Image (tube, rainbow, N blue to C red; front, side):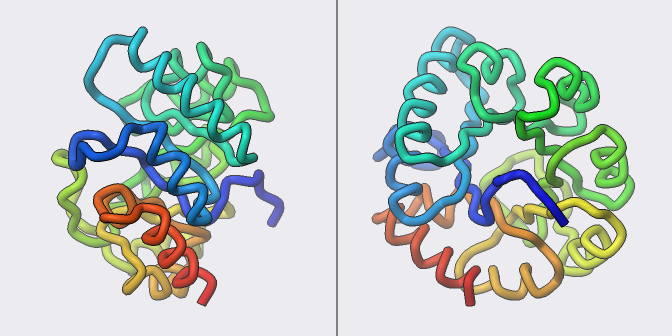
Length: 209
C-alpha cells in the first residue's frame, strides 16, 4: 500500500502538560530522537500567536526534513504552508480541507470508532488517528479507550494507515503495531519526559522491534 511519508512516530507537542520546553524545542528534540512527524496542537492563544509558533516549528522541521502537521487549525496550516493538517470529527470538514489543500498535502482524521474511521476514509484523508487505544490523561475530552480490538477492526477493514494514539509508550507500542497500526502518536511519552529526545529514541526502538 502506497502512503505518503507520514512517519511511524508522531510526536504531538504540548506546553500545557509540561512547561520546560517550547513547541519549537520539542520539535527539535523529538526529531533528534527519531520522530517521523511533528504535530502542533495548541488550544489557547490568538491566531497570530499560533501562526508565529507554527512558523518557527516549520523552520525546524524543514531544516531536518520532517513534516509538520497542524492539529485542528486549517487556517494556521495554510498561513505557514505546513505539510498538512490533522482534523477531528468536529473540526473543519476533511473533504473540504482536501479541496482547499490539494492532493499533495497530508490530511489526517481523528476517529474513535469504526464508523468514524469509515467517515474519514470517505473524505480522502491520508491516515486515521485512531484512539484512545488505552486510557489517557493527555486529552480531557477523550472518548473511552477502544483497546487493541478497535485497532484490529479498523486496520483490517480500511485501506489506510492507522496512527494509534492514547496511553501509548515504549512498553505497549509493539502490541499496538502487532494489532495492525502503521504507527503511533504520543504526547506525554515524549514531551513530559526529562529527556524528550531519549524518550523518542526509546519509543522508536520499540516500534522497530
